[in-house]
Image (cartoon, one colour):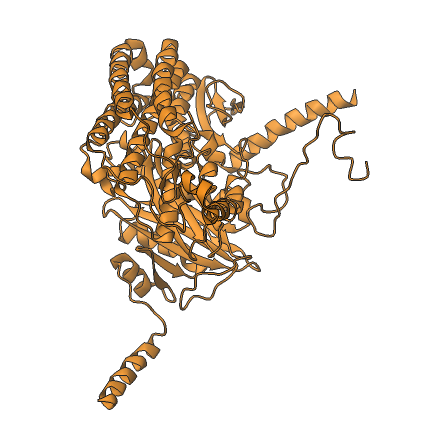
Length: 428
Length: 197
């Protein structure tokens, strides 16, 4: 009996706390307009959407104040997936670090691996060989394709185009199959490492990659036919979840959401890294900043990625896939069988790691979700003092408030979906 | 030959003493910051412009960057705990404290970045909040508060964001040891009965 009373007490208190939290945050939620003054006796209700809700992409909880079916205020609540990955990152050597960061944005792990590796290389002052740069770039674009295909699938399902779930997933699986062929794993590849990549491209990679490009090209043509002109789709997305460039910039929003507001900002073009200045592609942007535009941008970006991947296949330079610097690169497998020194070297590198000179650096790349940055502080030992990842989803989430305000609950689902948050990198 | 060289050296070192250990900024925005804000010091970190400033000036610097220098976005606010550093990168002219508050800014219009770092002592971890200037650092400052215990004065909603609300301690501080939950195997007598069992 007692337990039951306590249980109800706990539940009601949680709701009250939630209400207060939201009230306290009245001023902080950045909105396009001033919050409307509530008329009458304030017949609003506060509900929690999530953390267990099919449309919340994992464990996102959105606290909403509702006036009937209209969202008056919304506030994302996060932390349900917090596993202390930045703390873990301080206890892993630089060799092991990639296994950690790759699990943050699990839909496009390559971007995280690249940004971590580039930060470590900058601290080490190491130049990686040309071929590894191109391998990284090709993988990054394959990863972007997989991530955007996943978005097409989940976005379609969230808004009611359930068959998109099957189609998007189908093409994504094909992409992951190629990534698996190259890296050995479907996800969490741990393939890009400080000093280059883990292995050279396998035999027959050109054929597999080009075949994939053709398949996905057909796929996105199908999505275009299915969705872009579809009156129901347009009804559900056009003019929904609008955000302006000023709001997006003030909130630190980047990636497709920023580009949907008419602001053509892509780090691949603006501050080229890897070899993005040597390939031909366009930055896709639109003017309206609504859910439909974000869908269009991501769909078209798949085509741009295919363009880059094809150029990578064509222009892939020969040479080494990792830097031949004995300090950070383990000896080749054959040498370990022949030489005891090589064995010791290999053992030391994988148990103690290599030392990185004291210093700090911030490196950023364009992930499918926006600017992913890595801030590493080294104290001259084999493990970083601080390894911080600037996760794009973490900042993009803040745009949910202004996007949902004054819209229907059904639109909130479309908004969550179009922000495309990956809670793994939000909570880290 | 030796004498003139010595004279030149003396002159150089005199000028050096007037502005002790102050590296000349190679970045125009950093130069403007160093000129405008007393006590701030420029540092070139792997080709990236960094300005070390007093923590009380953080909000003013952010306002200046936004209004005068077109730095439209504050990309990131984070912190570093230097308690257990084996070797700490020394920046001449900066008195190191245990915590460092790091803010990354970007100007899209001018396509450049700058990083501002402030020293925060463990005895007084209050810092002016950047939320009035850049609304987007709201989550980031909550995260730094949550994980480092750095208090942002003027933040509208300084609550824990990643850790549970009733958590005590600040996980990313170096003296906050990571907790381990022991693994329980099937044949074990029970969960966490201690070593005696």
